[in-house]
Length: 138
Image 1: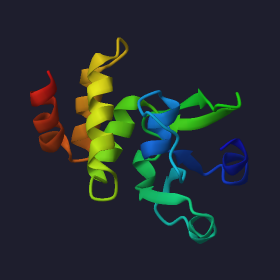
Image 2: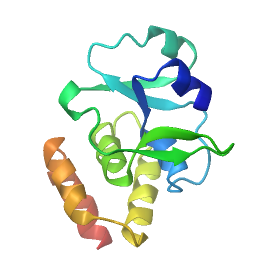
Image 3: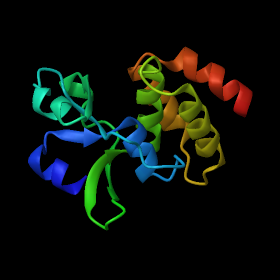
């Protein structure tokens, strides 16, 4: 992961890879997932088996933070609130069970910030869908 980010510093680890680094997933994903700005050419990454999502330039850095990899290197990832919104936004491309488990774990976290989660959900136009999930969990 560290080497991937060194080669492609214009990407941020997201989706299931971010869930793993945030301790919100049970196992390391088979393929790493990153997000890049719209207009980025991901062909060299997809050829390596990396899943690449794109987002508008204005939303790219929203929710970015750092986390340690299993080998102890710091990499840039999206925080839990942004990651959950990305997962819901891409729900047709991700395992629904992984999304449900991540939402359950998020609700149990002491550091959860529901206000920020709802702000991000509004920016990514997933507030209705997120509300349905949270209604069951809270």
